[in-house]
Image 1 (tube, rainbow, N blue to C red):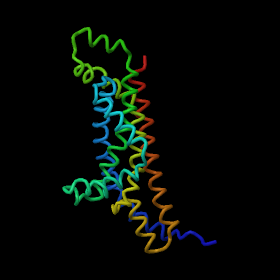
Image 2 (cartoon, one colour; image 1 turned 90 degrees about the vertical axis):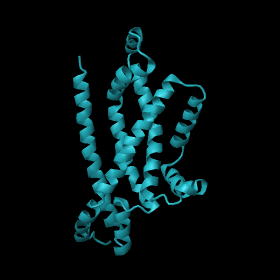
Image 3 (cartoon, rainbow, N blue to C red; image 1 turned 30 degrees about the vertical axis):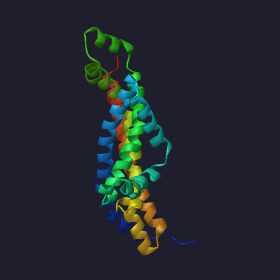
Image 4 (cartoon, rainbow, N blue to C red; image 1 turned 120 degrees about the vertical axis):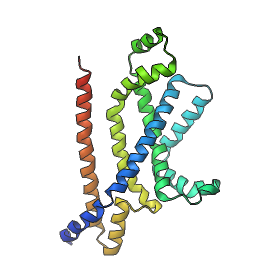
Length: 224
């Protein structure tokens, strides 16, 4: 049985860390876009606009029911066939598009559940003072729903960071892509993938700590 090459692993750490920014940039951009889209989808699922609601249900069903990797391939390899203007789409853009739509479908259901969790008296109070649906959502319902959904949304961001590891299949050199290239050159696959696994693990644990503190703070602020 071959011993692990710890010197190689230590030398690989700074190489992998140099690709953390692109991993976080893809995850951050996808999170912002997915959150905006998910909020719109969730509001629509609550107010249920005819015809549009059926399209939203279909969208959510498709992106929740198919693997993320398949969706990434559809955007990177498939879209250029349908839309020639996207023939030059790069891997980063395709990855962000895939992550955005995939996680927006999941986040929409979480936000919808959070909206439904807001006490009905809040809805009735807003209606009693003559607020429109848009005003009620923006000023009363969504801020309260955000507190309920926040811990779950952080979980999705964690999953999104891990999901960026699939971007290397589109030719993007992020953390996983860098590990793959280093391993191909050294043939020390176990060491290379172990290093990237530990770095992902540390990042996720750090975000889990942030999530725990956020949840405690939000619950404390609304404690009676």
